[in-house]
Length: 361
Image 1 (cartoon, one colour):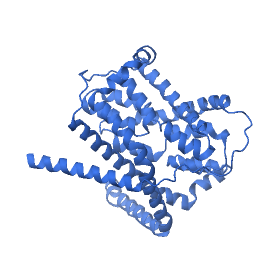
Image 2: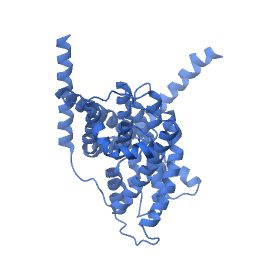
Image 3: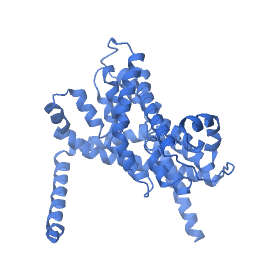
Image 4: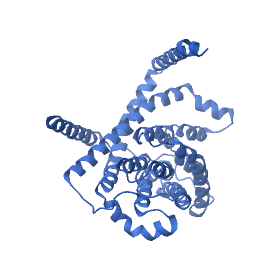
């Protein structure tokens, strides 16, 4: 029976899946083409300009040891409230203000250097996961409501959830920082390495965004999410929230100014979407398991929902006049040329580094 499965059934299923994929790409070629083009422009105009600088800065703080100096003002909070080493607490803060993939990347770098154990990296991945205030204020606050307070409310809800999770981890599991506490050092080699590693991280992120746009376009063309929502009697905004669980940028398709949906939006943003989870799989160190992170997504989403519901009632009145049915598009800039120049610069630096290494060998 096992030979039958290995030799015939599995190859047959793979062949059928490949055939179905090619058929879908052929039938929905126009939708897929538009989706890939839109994803590529979003990477060039939004993701690279907004994430590269903060990713490079975070990496530089870790590589130079400056994170220890940055953690000094937070020492009383880290020690007495969160029970975390200063170096780990500053990683939690950086991860929550930088962007979704930054946290797992910083933890992977610390694990690679031997500064933390694999267990510590896996535990902290549960609370080092947030889109950052700039993303929420723009993509949700301005784009959906024309008010940054709405986006910052979502950010505050998710950040509070992550800080509560960090406090629980610090008090129960007591993670330790085992790295050497040497003096901060800034050299040209460290600066070059930080830029190149950040460039490679951006390449991974953008590649996944573009690749994930293909199945998302096919799913949308087939109307899968619409049929699911229709089966449960849910509205159009519920369909958008469901599609956002696949790719978080779909959240901007919500219609109207639904302040009542802020808790649901916060829960979806706390989950982050399947595309971002795949990015984390690519950026993490191979030894680090994402199982604790995946387990924490449901309780974190529920906590973000509850905190957002509590906060939004105090910030926004019960009855809000409709600001506008017209969406405020927050990205109309053209950063294609600067982003392309940045990519070419990173490729040249990486080529020079590889060439120098080959000559020395």
